[in-house]
Length: 454
View 1 (tube, rainbow, N blue to C red):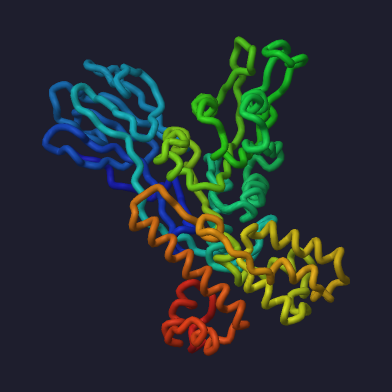
View 2 (cartoon, rainbow, N blue to C red):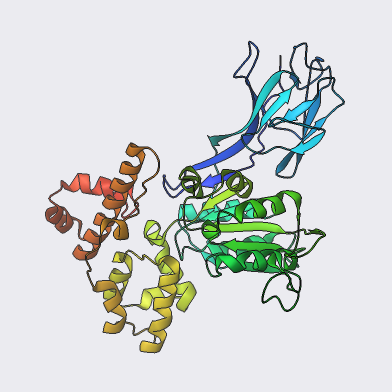
């Protein structure tokens, strides 16, 4: 039994905010042999075609009496994998049903005669060199995580694969979707944006798929849905984590089959649109908590990009201020204002910063932005519960969730400490009752200060 050597064709890339800024991983699909003496052998789907059979010229050779010489092949079609039976004697079965042609889904059980294989994803670390640019469309940042995102988006925007954007509210998911569309071959087509959280569950199906006149009470005319309007362009589904469970399989079928039916229609409509979705929650955790369908998750996360929060990339604040309010403004701001900006935790992320600067325009003449009205937002101290002040995850291994909360606490504590002490390390160490070298180590760990040598 043999297989072709693995190749470097990632189908799923993750830039995680829950790990270090330079953590990247690629997901490659493979088949895992479940039977015979070679059970557990992994066969990567690294090329355009993977041939399976008893004959020695196949990519995967299975020497078993129920397997034909040339039994089947798995053909890569963009970000999907098509199984094609080659007229085998005992047939090819997918999840218990005999098939001549069918698309594989993650976790699917493939039966080749009496031999079973599991179609599964595997995640491994990869490296993405940061872009030399500090802007990509409306996205702005010179921090390493953001420049890695720029490089990644430039690479995957040219494909037609589905993309999942993950990040807190206001982190820039909408700007990322616009950048992807503008850099894609579909840039001349429409960019249709639909917020799954802004429409009631009873109307979402009509908004997505459209409806015919008289399809339901109140349907006084035909309506063209988002999938149809996005034909030839990009459909951006924001807040996908709010999509009702009963609608998720319908969306999955539409994306898989590239066709849908308007409500009340008898014939299907084909559509050709690139799908980009965004979530404020970790969708994998949502699937583990049975709040999101696992098969839809895998279909949407061909590529996944997690956008960091503003508190995790505060070195970008000066650049963002200049981008939103005028080049060179940051350097003209009073020191007190700059300290407040750098000390604030920005729960609303980039959106909150932009809105604060917009309000400042109407409160004072730039660059005189030291008014109490602007500073009040950043100086008030309000007690908060753990769930409101820090990101708490209650699904997953206990140790992992605890470690994430501890890291979030340390970052938040140190950020506020620097704000109170105006960056004075000696004073901060005394107030925190920490050894100065240990404090430096913690600050450097979270990117809040350079090393003492710098």
